[in-house]
Image (cartoon, rainbow, N blue to C red):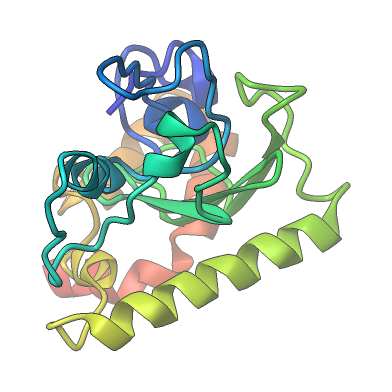
Length: 216
């Protein structure tokens, strides 16, 4: 897991399901590996295990979710995934989908941070995620949301649990640090004269009011 350096107004932490937090460099060297090749395709970290197993002549377990990308590091061939989905449910409840040159982030529970419901970034032109293009690129947003829905359906079809773990967190009151703190945080914002921020937070959290009432 990476660390943000100001992206999405988060400094030195990993609180979001975004590009910077999830992009981890990998340098490999060894027998029969292609020297100097830069693999630009999409891979999960769970793909590394199957890759190494295949490289030494082993067999991947049927229970593993990873996919080998050995042709990429031995031949320089394309062996990546069409898109990636990353999740965050500790400091906020978000899922991001990385596809083409885009990163679409959907925020389900903002963890009491000022995140909009949807954020879209052109990673090639804007790697530090400074300009949200949701309003300018509705067709790209639509594609990203379709990919997210496709991924969730695939995961739930093979999951041992009948519920999405992210929604379990939300039903419990959101990320751990927010439980029981929503009303107090809104009050603190107003006491500090930050009424616009308090208003935005209340609008975003209106859908969770029954959960917060249940917490007392």
